[in-house]
Length: 193
Image (cartoon, rainbow, N blue to C red):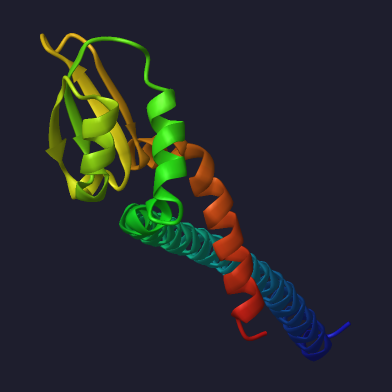
């Protein structure tokens, strides 16, 4: 092999080594690109998952707060409605007492235990009945009791409240759930679908 052939062979070998080197470098670069792309894809997916998780948490938090505020508003509205119903019931007591005043008086006064009653509180319409039933007692009038009577001993040690107002307030814890249930059903019936 001559000098020219040797130069050509060395050049060819050098070019092949350079080409082989560049192919290896390009393969390494391509592999690194794929790694970087895979890492970017993984980071993007992780960021999306994190963002979705945070969005879900925020959404759940807002929903919980909205439900809590809604429940609080509903409870306040129901409490106001309950108070209005109780007040309305108290206002209706005089009408209830007037349906058969004598019969109601007899029934309510018969429930009072025997004692020396010094003061009797009644509605103005029952003053005459109270004076005839308790002639020894001082009779006072108070329209707010709605009907019935309140009796007190001279020393004030015993007081029996058998007024319609007191009976309503005593029965209210049992009446309230029934009234509220009926009202809720009525609201459901009247709500548009």
